[in-house]
Length: 327
Image (cartoon, rainbow, N blue to C red; front, side, top):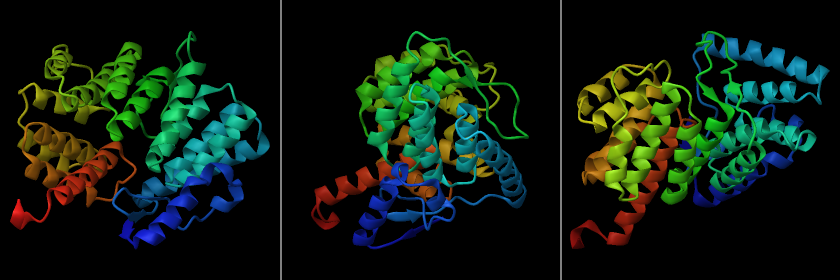
């Protein structure tokens, strides 16, 4: 959910959001909002269907009880923060992960998850610093799997700590148009990826990063190992987009399928196809697709945030070009 407000008010609320890592947990039970979008809209906790909301609330109650009984235990703190984020209270999740960092400053997991939620809250510089710190802490260590921590999902671990650190660091750089740094991060992510799911997701963002940086030949090389028969369980949209980039899938069919499915796939595909049109010179079609994503309500998703940032940049370009009647 999002609402437009005056720029002055937005600045005040944004300053409130930016302080979330320094405030006591008790202040976050019913926050008035979560973040401010790059276009000045107030962002509230995304809606959940009743069954999912009930399940997440039950899981959060269990995680909070564990945290209250073992407030210094790293796993209990981490679980409490992650389940808090599942219900859309990202500010409180940041505060919980900050508590974990204070108690366990050498545990990379807290920086990884706090950095993720800093991206959600549009605090990209803070996210980059957290992921850089996390990457330092896991240097020369064995990787460890990460679970989804929600019931009813695939039990198989499809990603791991180090690949997720580099994946989200790349995302934070990409969202701020730092394409050289994003390329380096996604290449590291691919090096640490052990499943086709993670390889597809990282390859998708790396391909777009390289195309935005004008490295078309390198981008083409990323597509070579991508095949239709990859073992994809979770990241089907990323894989299908790569098939579009290879010329195997038709973009309109993929977009139609995404619009008939859940909103997460819609944001991923909507942004991915919009970016594909943008880098191929079809700016008006790209703007239309970005706008469609932004009109949705899943503002916490990477595809939504990327579409939002593109709309901000496109708006700036059009304003700089002057009124349409003199162009």
